[in-house]
Length: 398
Image (cartoon, rainbow, N blue to C red; front, side, top):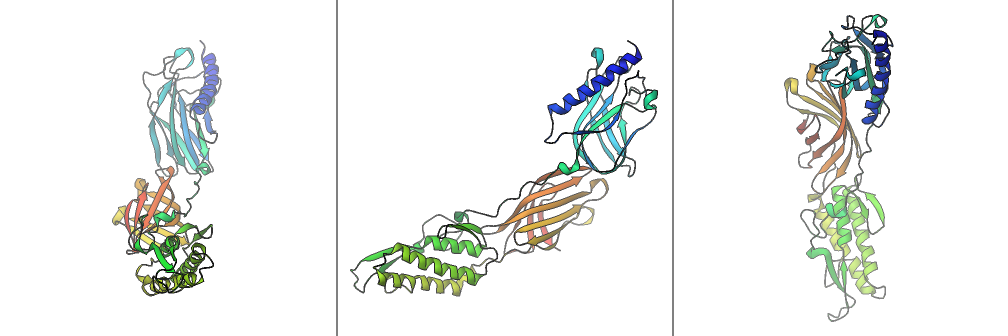
């Protein structure tokens, strides 16, 4: 077969095989061919000039291909390919390649690698581990034949952030102390007489739903309010406001659970309880007096946080707007430099708060978005626990 014929077949196979490879493992967006050196003419061995391309914007590289016809012998094994920044000298890769047959069953005529690496705008050289078998011709001016598929870097989009809504059971324990629990409490119910006669009609009232909402309010949680049928976010409430709602909720329960003709029982239920039990007002008086012992201060995550020291130190800056938390950090230097960006939602829980969201982490030209969280205990407001890609463990406020 003539060199010219081999060149024509190479060019056709290159396009067809390239599209097949991309289609078999295609990301959500369609890759773009951002660089190609190839033509329909005969080829020779030995790339003698660099294969260089320039991009004016960042790209996420997904495939790199090079062509090794090698006088119809192909190669017995594949090698590696990579990209070198001509501005910084930074090497992306090298990455191991797999081989595909060329025209006539030529073994490993095509070398290709599948990656997901983001490169910034700049000028790059394709580096092949076997320049002696890398196909070239006069039309390529001695440059090795290659092509590169990529996605716009902007296609790495942020996932939707979680809602702060939690179940009422996760932040409440009814009318009693302790951690969140579904267990019945002695203070859940009270009994009211509709007369001064100890043998008169008795009405048992269950205040647990009001106590649950009061617990959620002290934690600053966002929950469903069963009494109003609406969602309520307590994060910006103060203790006095939560206590006032507690009183209103209990008095509403009295009217719901005691028939309107039992006016004495309703009055005792909404007030101080009469002779038989505590009423809504007496319960309210207790929390306004002793409630500060149980109130949980809302987290303030604004500012700088650190972990470690020296070159491995992490410096994290967080900015909080109510429940919205954003941040950025970096650690390491040189090739070990890691940069991160965070977006999350602060979720109030029973004993602590957690910021759940996502981090966009970049290291060595590779960018990924992964789940990340920060947990803060109200008893140690200047310490947080991080869990995520590239940032984990304890950080303290700088």
